[in-house]
Image 1 (tube, rainbow, N blue to C red):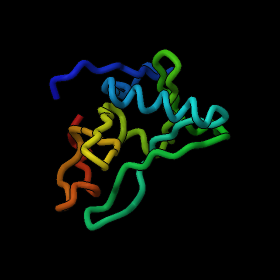
Image 2: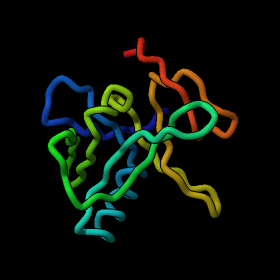
Image 3: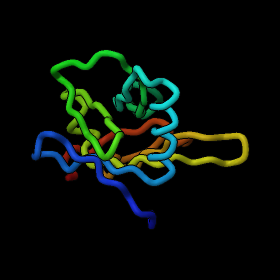
Length: 126
């Protein structure tokens, strides 16, 4: 990926952080403006033939077990249980004709299924 990335840093210094492309940043801003009383949470969901998929959800409530990543007016929350898998992830937003979706790039992903929506993770990679 040869695009400039915005680095969302955590309030806890022992994490690499999350990275978003300009397209993802703009789309997240649109979502925040549309649902101004909600926040964005990035999590993993057990799914598909390979085990996991990323999921972005809107939340109203913040819990103590969540890690906050921020840059400018963007705040992304991640559960403590998911952070080992999500830390360092790059988030992009892709628009092709009538399709649009967030795409996630993570060096810890070992294999994707054929549709590239579910994956398994190699915890040995940093």
